[in-house]
Image (cartoon, rainbow, N blue to C red; front, side, top):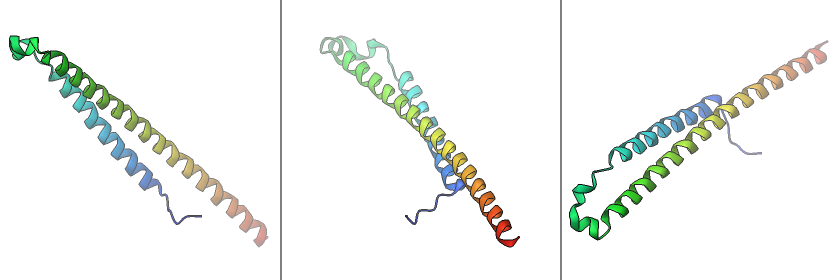
Length: 107
């Protein structure tokens, strides 16, 4: 047995933190989408040496990673909230069981 103490508040706090970070990654992905620029900004030299392709590829990769991080954090948040519900139900059942045992011993 460990000395870890899991409280509903701790799980909810971590879930809220995951939600907040997920929102930030979603905003980042939106900003990266807005960062797409007109190919004219690279000029003819940039187009010839392939800057445009590398720029868009890198931008798209960053945007995809931000979306994946957002999805991961949303799933983590939901898992933490589900765990909190499971702990609450388990605590309720344990308290009920101990109350029944106490009644049996007293009676």
